[in-house]
Length: 269
Ligand code: ADP
Image 1 (cartoon, rainbow, N blue to C red):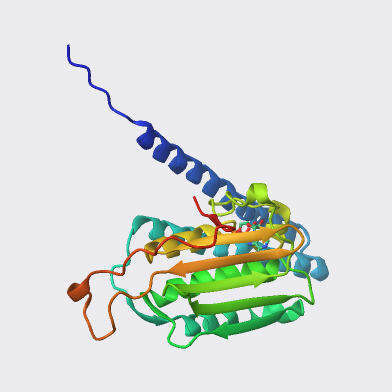
Image 2: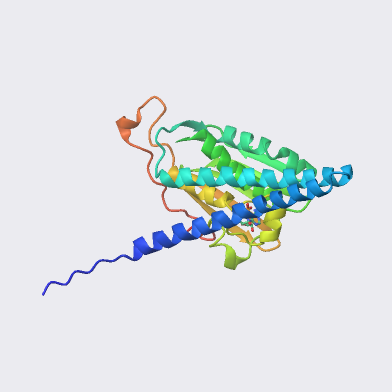
């Protein structure tokens, strides 16, 4: 008697995640598209009322912008998920990454009178994709500003950790995240407060993108948060295992990061 046993649970899980993702994507896309359709009808019905037309057009622009953000994030996430590793890493200075990411958020921060403080170590560089790293840090800073009240402070630090790993740490004094939600916020489309996320233009994909960018760089992202006190997100990337003058073939790709020595932080599943 020959008994063959095949464990298909992983395949089922992958299929389930894929189905969930597709269902979420279509639901998320339908909302702004439905809004635009309704608003187009409303404009047609109000053609004799210029004020109403202007109001509807403004809302239409908002929905269209949301659609644009969603499509951009979905495409970016799909691309990141299909590549396990970076194909062509270059030398990237994290201080410059931080400056560029923060520049994109300055206007939003000024509107809320949020102080942005940057502290960067010198020669804090990694092998990586500059555009992706800017996106990841920007997503964290956008969230820090979006989920903080006015008059607070957001600190962004790029540093070489004592063990040589490179870290970008974004700290805010905002709403904080309930402990029970910390393990879920990196899931696609997961939001602690969906209404607040939508009103600030969130897509629910920002942290998922951060997680994948870190993974593609051989690193990870962790979070510490306390409700009512604020949050700290830490991107941790491996120290470059070979210098700019050497080629990747000489020494191999960057090593995986060593275990974090910060037990209070929740590793992303
Ligand atoms: P979103 O587009 O909704 O911000 P994200 O994937 O970036 O999506 O974040 C997921 C959820 O995690 C958010 O909806 C929010 O509830 C929570 N979150 C993320 N960053 C912060 C933060 N700095 N402070 C408080 N809550 C946060």
